Image (cartoon, rainbow, N blue to C red; front, side, top):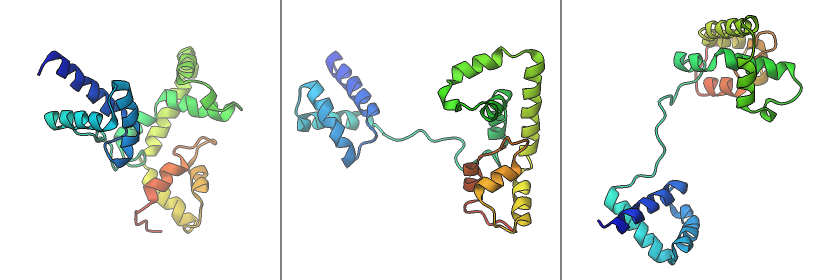
Length: 185
């Protein structure tokens, strides 16, 4: 391949990476790429197909290594989720009236880093307690469902499992965990 063909192939790979996927619905943005290349849509698609055929280009998502796992059952996800900084964010969301979305993660991280050792220790202990409690969440969920005879909302289950008004897992995580499982009540 000449230098120009290599540059063309690289540019087309960049164009492919920016489109959602190559299917019949993804051809609408192609007319914009064709216009940028100074070609008509048909010529551009021929050029694109040539690059795909040369490199065995595959357009798909990278597979996740946590597929099928959730924070309720996976110790790896629990260790990632129940950290002192995440516990700090949960506590701050309960104490302040403003939504956490209005504060950036960088600002919150800076605030957390500026805490003195005593305050930081309280968040470390809170995160450690949540992590220890999370190891028994499936049993606690079963007990809560048994106690309420299965008649409890996801929000109610979230509140039931929370500690001091701070939920250990969200109602959506609970719903995803329980969905499709045969729970003995």
